[in-house]
Length: 298
Image: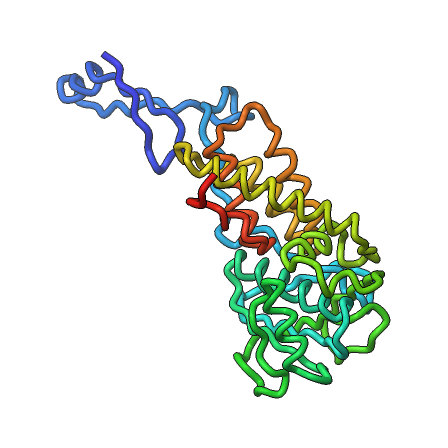
């Protein structure tokens, strides 16, 4: 009778044991070993086995385009040390607000990757004004740039206006915002979505129609998320999760993340529970409060 077993010493190859032959080994005064199939290239076929696991250190790396070189650069140190994200936002205008928004996206992406961060605001002429504008837009607080050196052993990433001069270090340049005062009266979440619709290295134009469209999209998504939340939960599909991470790990591609959400919204093969978990997961990067209306009256 034959049985099948595996051995850690054979790389997962199948080992065929002939029990009857092994049992008779004492009678014929000899040891009979179980036969092991030859490896490929040695006269036989290799048995099917799982590929070797990826090393623990083989993980995607968040990369940004360094404005100094126009080349990709890692946003976090190789040994997972802390990253200091320093936003340079002189003045109180919508372009300065966009600088703070991009710094917020960088902090969120680093935290999703497990990298500790320290967010600083530098160069604001009137610190209270930009901080209040940022808070209204859902941007998490920044410490004062003169607060100290912070955690050691990491690296610094500077987020600046396009064309500005920043201290030495990896630099993210943010293109300007073209608008005629509409941002001051816009719904903050709609303004955030309108700014996210364009990559931070591209100029963005804001007018009443753009802000209204962003508001409509946000309202539709929040209603949908609230409805999906009432269905049985399902995990984020692995392929969808990979596409989301690939987008924000590629120079903070917020428009790419939004494209994935639009595809998920209309994919007929996805259960509603998976749509809910996908939107909740992506919102950890986008910061649009997509789950805000859960539990609200229909």
